[in-house]
Length: 240
Image (cartoon, rainbow, N blue to C red; front, side):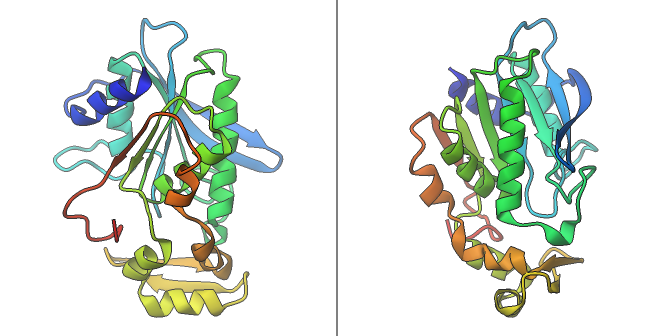
């Protein structure tokens, strides 16, 4: 079963060695999703995990402290040690994928997730009947909605998922900016300071969807194995 293997990998991911990786692209019309496929060596027809990054992130995720390796890159290597393949993607507008970050929306990322999941179901190199979902932060919110759209997912791990979008993004960008975004036209750019430093610019359409997405509401319809992991001292993705 995929869930116990995922749980074990998440608990012991330090020190993992890289397996065979290859860049891939998923094309849907004029949209191009950049991704990295990690295949375990010596395992035929392996189960596969779709990994989706958090807000302002990219497919490798943030660098693990004391290393030069991204969290998702390290996670992919650890899964491969257990005979599990993985595909980690850049959402459109992020990383190496096509699109404009300012036009990012939750519905757009959910559509990207569905496209990537469907791609894995037909990929000859993996077992398309055993596709798991592993997501971090905003990716966890997207992953919950993906599980609702693709309930055949073999297992789901939500890692520090955004559970209350208005609260979380008010913490990240400030409540005044969230209110400004909610009131702005869909194509109006809103520039906000981020709580961890730097700035980001998103159109009003991103903010308009904050009240319309719910990780708990979406995952409630999923009947497969589910693991939710939340840090007890989490201060950004709140409340839990």
